[in-house]
Length: 270
Image (cartoon, rainbow, N blue to C red; front, side, top):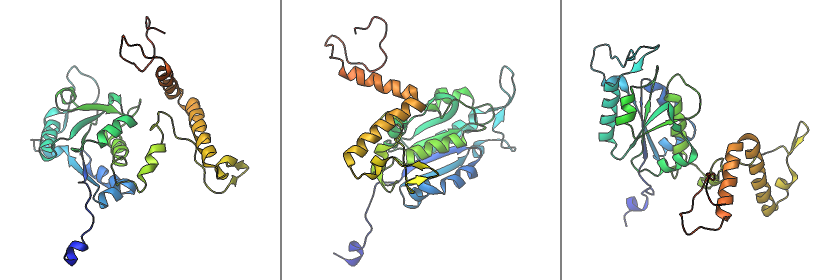
């Protein structure tokens, strides 16, 4: 074996590709240069590209928006440049999921992030602006349409960065300690248990004694109970969903119908 072969660095999986289609590519480039995503890019685990939608306009003014049909305030992003950007990116990034960031999309959650992180073709995130994007993009050119919350942003860039970060940290090799993902909020249907660090007492507020006891079983039990208690306090909707799943799993199976998770419907057997 030659010296060069012995000294070759270990090989790892190809970079997970993200492409953000936006009117403000510099905003995206600056954000992804830092923290975990920035380190993932430097390590070759992530590949993040920002594409200017205006590059796909055809007029001298690089017009990307127009007035809405039917009247109303604001402007709507034109379909031609957005569709052109999507089509070109699909050619460069085959197998990618094209996702439109939209306040009217379905809620983005941790389960979706996990599913998208397993897609070898990566993600193409389309950022709307003004009053949104011509609906024909969502209907015929995007694979999905998601929202990060029940509020409205000035543009889709911040939402796309949220999705990018949530998915990127699930890509193997991006986090220094991949095992830490298992205990995070929403991975088990609950918010994460409370975390504490030094000092043991701060302005009269003490760390729970059990966390400093060294008893791993008691620590694990405390964390499970604390996670459920906090979920009930801050996200009762999630707590109710967890209870429903537990009840459904304990219910004897009815061989006459498939098992179902969720809230009982009128007429269901008890």
